[in-house]
Length: 521
Ligand code: UTP
Image (cartoon, rainbow, N blue to C red; front, side, top):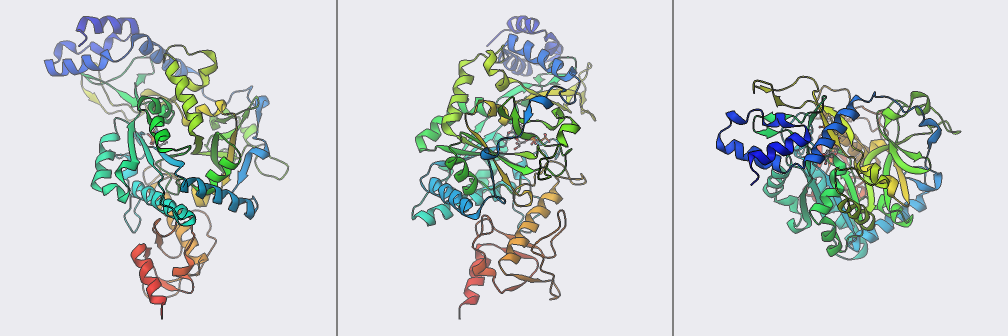
């Protein structure tokens, strides 16, 4: 183990000697723990990390003035659409996606290393229940969608197939997620097809460029952003595991979108038939100032440009059909070929990091600044839970690799069908447990009504049938459909056509069977 003297010298080099300021007060156990943690930090890397964080935070926020002239939308031939495309093309994409799934060539990869500070729970967000009638968690909904899409592809091609589930976690989420999966019997997935791995952590830094002490004997660390994926893939030989299983295509998604379609055959098929190495699902922006990144080109290179970098004038530009010119809102729902991920992981392992990278890799490593509340100890060693942001977490984003793609495509989907993220606690204006629950129940109500169901309230009074609901409005009846019964609204007619059902309805496999039996003479 490194000695106190060694570690002190390394910290001096890094300009971070304050991390040992409570040394004299510490008992042997905490001393050893602190030394072990500090010994892992490379002094040059630590110095650069802290300097870079403070410098990035000091840069005035706001749009890049010279960006407007360099910005272009993606060319139309690179953009597919769920709603505007012709139905035959959509069917072709879906067929191709199901074929690839049936061939065991598709995996899903969940980004679940975030701390969910805005939601404010002390467990992983995937374990959150938004208050559905079934009480399902986000993890359970996702597992069931995997099971259903395997079944759909298997039935179509007369095979038994597997979509492995890779779950990137962090120091905060690995333990509880692993326990939760075990306690729930992996939601009936084969545990050998569920692979948990852990991303790296980075020190949180004060606005003055000093690494923060969370306790007298512990440096505050935060996960390195969802773009930490690429290094984590290399750290844990995840791509080798994929290769071993024959996986060629990976659907990467965020934990918090309650409507996410795992291994969506239509999106996969579109990307595969386009010969894409990278793909991004996008939704039309609701208004020019909506705070989402935009998939577009800068100097002809496809990438995601953050909303804060685009001026209000540029964000408001309109195309000839009246739609926003930059309207491809990124929803962190991506397609990658394994080959592309392998190339990125290889570059990363070739580089010393976070020392100065070769120029061509800079965008890959350019961290983004997140200003957050970081619990810490004050000068006297008392614990402080800050009420306003006091620290900088440096994060990489999963889309930072887009500029390296040789053929990036975007695929536009309908927001009400595919995107409702859970970011904030209830009481917030948007992206809360209530809005996520409403989005899912509204979708299931629409599917049921389109399949021919009618609903009664608890007193038996008929409720209106509204196949098109205004956004953000509660549906007239409560209907929750298990992903094991329907993945995207398909196959519901056999249970629901001509039926009048009492709200609330939970259409799970048992209820679906009962409805089928009740129809037989
Ligand atoms: P967010 O940027 O919304 O962050 O993550 P978050 O941690 O969930 O929530 P806040 O900002 O603290 O409130 C988007 C997705 O990226 C994952 C999250 O788990 C989520 O699926 N993520 C984020 C990681 O996997 N690792 C990270 O380091 C950060």
